[in-house]
Image (tube, rainbow, N blue to C red):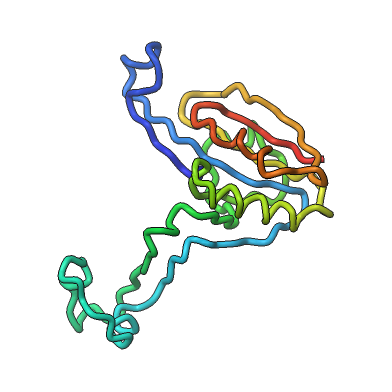
Length: 180
């Protein structure tokens, strides 16, 4: 989920247009939600990283940095976790967002919906919200080609099963899952 971009592969009626569409996913509510980042990404200054004395692989871009770059902020990533669940406050909403979502609390829903671990993480996250039903919804929308048709689904949060999250796999579909 998160953000996906496809240019010029949007369908026959758009081939003549150099249109670029992006798919964004959100989890929204009328109450604040906990933020979570299971991607294992660590931000630090390059100087702090050097002090960890991690042996160089010889193939890292970090090998090109020197002492003048000690204040440079770097991201350390675990490639096995980069598609895991990440839910963060959405402060930079795509154009046209207001046409769909009216809730006050908007969060990016990131990660790979095709990943089994991601689905399990989202399931556990949602289970932790079982007492919250104040406008809780999951949205996934293609932006960049005007108003989109949205497939709407309703799920009972208290009865949610992991298999219910299979609906999130559809890359091409715009959808809204409302939790009751």
